[in-house]
Image (tube, rainbow over all chains, first blue to last red; front, side):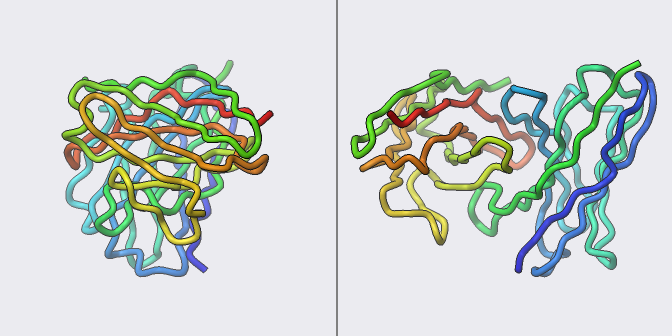
Length: 119
Length: 107
């Protein structure tokens, strides 16, 4: 079964750091681009970052540029999101998603992990 | 930055047709995808590249994109279709934009 499982969400103070993980299974992880998407409570979906299959290219949304870093370990079938200088408005459920093959869309999503930034 | 706009809500009677719109400048020049999100669940892809249904998505879902508007149509709407629907545009491989979402209520 194709599956993505996020972990690492927590309550953190403003200015703090957190690393999210996304474990992939059921497909050849190293051949797919991957994304992080977030959703603030009661709000819509917002794209955060993307990484190519080699881990050599990674565009970011302006709201997280310079603070967040997306990375991957293809040997471990795992995607990461390092989040630094966290702000209250980073509070959201964070989803990892697979870039569908020749689909220009996100075809597989994880269940999400909650990040709460609060003092 | 590019923006796409959706109506915040839509009500449809069971068995009728729901047309969910997504608007943006020359949106027809870009690919549009649609995602369904039921309460407390992760998004599910229901349409990609304007009018293609992923495996497992019922035939009652269809899509169209031209000019400044993309439309997701649900024919014979069922209670199970009650959810938020988000459009997403794709024009380059460096930025992805979602609409604000439409809450579909089945009466």
